[in-house]
Image (tube, rainbow, N blue to C red; front, top):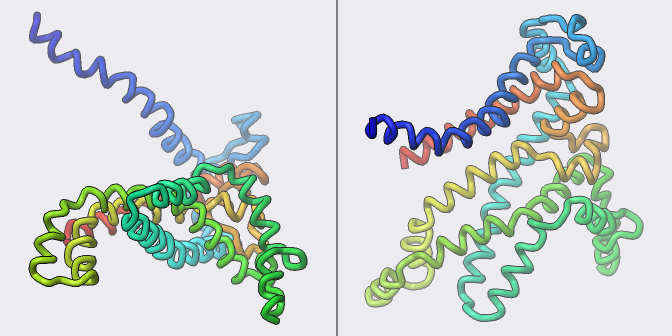
Length: 292
């Protein structure tokens, strides 16, 4: 009797959490997978009899859709440039802040963290002014040194780079705190031993600091990569995917198909392509980490 109660108790504690996880995480994924094999749209949502099973047609059509292929290419562009830039810049900021242990360090931690918790709409208002081709601050500063105005959000490639700059600035805060915590957890005895051996700052950084932060670097890289693969807010509020679909991302494409054009089946299929890319990218990183 007592043994039976002992065995049930853990399940009673974790049961509500598992139930919530299934209802709000796994069940929507399974429903979305089912929808991706149908032609469900707004009329089908009102009358389920109008929903037809189309098999893999949505997936086949996706890879023949130039707009989706362009959005996929844009997403890879964001990831290839944005992820190394975001990880490296946050690591650099953390290392610089770690040199100080006074009010300067505390002040700049707040300065760098505030963008991470600021509403994206407020950020968009400020950066839209900065990027304005006629009245923006950036072009004004360039004009002082006789450089022509730059179409920050009007030319596709420049617009993608402008969005990357904005996203890196916004995301540095959280990654910086993780790196800073990892830096401050390294035992000082390592550096004292290196000093006795005559190691300079570069030797200590590459032989002690970076290896000691390998897990933090791995965690930041994985989470940053997943975030950039789902790049949505910046192109949505700044360019809405334009100009000429040049800044559209896969996540924004899914939103447009699912919520603007009400093509739920097509949008669900696109979301599963993105889901597969995220899973593969994450598994590759875990595999590399295990090899390391």
